[in-house]
Length: 364
Image (cartoon, rainbow, N blue to C red):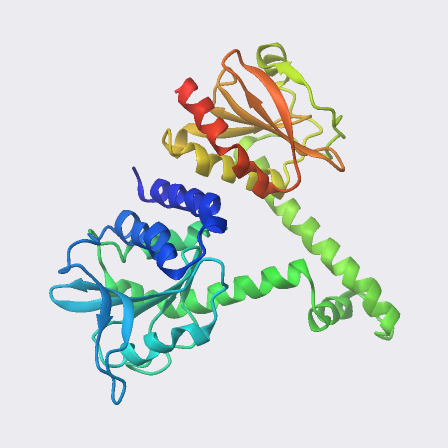
């Protein structure tokens, strides 16, 4: 299984089990140890590679422990501190990492709750762990641009120098991307004022601020949507316009009757970021059964199709997201008859993970 596939499989496991994990110890056993072993490639049962409850005396602090130390050639390279999965990470949780970082040879420190992994180094001052991570891996929303750097910390291709040299750019680019994402979701006054000043010459009153807060948020979403569609037009050579509204009744349909008719109907189609995000979730689930490159999508006038081997006779699922209110995921039985299941959010797709795996296994 490839690196990306293993990461996607672990992400699915974390999503499905996170609410059942209530303690730090359970988080380590269920999520963090699999991350160290299946993602980074170290043997968690070999003390020459992974030392649990690693102890190093720090000044007057005696007997304090950090959860894991990853070793190479007898030296500590990575320190990992864990918190329980139900708690968000805070820099206050990293007190042991700060102390241990200065008294070991480690250049990488990781603070995690099993779902989010914050990677730190010492860019600001030598042998002193930075306050801000240079890389943030969120298994609920994996940023694929980070995976090449993450892979450099794996046992087989460990390249610490390369990671450190790229860390400063990663740190600030990552922080900027997260800041931009926040502004696109809920623009703050300074952000709104910046763009309003480019198009509006009147006084920035309370009324104007309220109006432009809505307008900036709307323009940001439309801009992102247009960028995605432009990329798709270039890649597919297809023509995209506005989507039509889809009926919202739950019904069973024969895949064979309708798929072939609308494969070539690519007019009046708009592929939305939400459809692409849903596709990535289905792909992450399905890649436990097949290689991810075999899973493709085709956007249709009424629905968003997810296929195996780019073959319309091998439908994995359909996303019915064109309706203004209710969304559905369409799943197929062994006779390729589709049943639509209502979903309230994209995360509800994970509720159908077992059915999706069965469907893919049947088609492969």
